[in-house]
Length: 167
Image 1 (cartoon, rainbow, N blue to C red):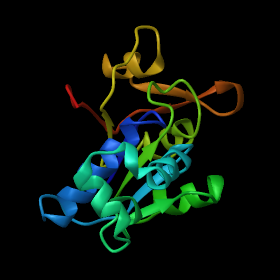
Image 2: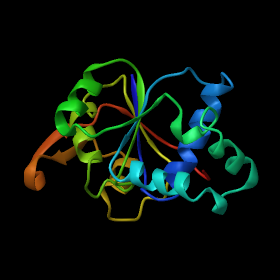
Image 3: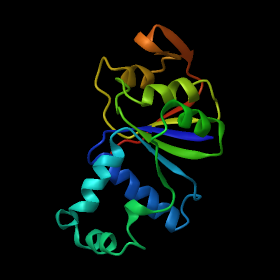
Image 4: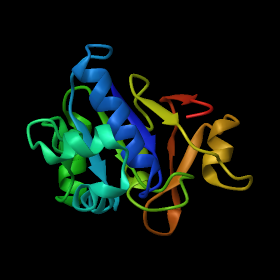
């Protein structure tokens, strides 16, 4: 299945990328594509351009193209819009990092439309879900989510919903 992780473009996404890259490199989790949707790719470019603001061991890895975790082969920048999202949804197991972290809009809504009805997929929250947001409602067990233009349609939410506290 697929794991959808709604996240915020700055900071949290890069932390997740580092954790996932290291876990795959160490064999802690199986290697698989990690698709980056929304402004995540742009924020990652800032980290790679200004490594002097990162911790020393990460700086050293960024300066070595073969060891730069942000350039690992499993990371894929989604730039093909809904057509590329459909191909990924129909494809093999993968991880998807997508904005917006509280399900308040952005590309994550397309992912919910594609993956929400799939019981083999999972939605994993790694950030705080403010009261009143769709993310908060989903955490509390809402079984359908609004999608489409103007969110006038709904899709069943049959995917597993998980929360990783304290990330």
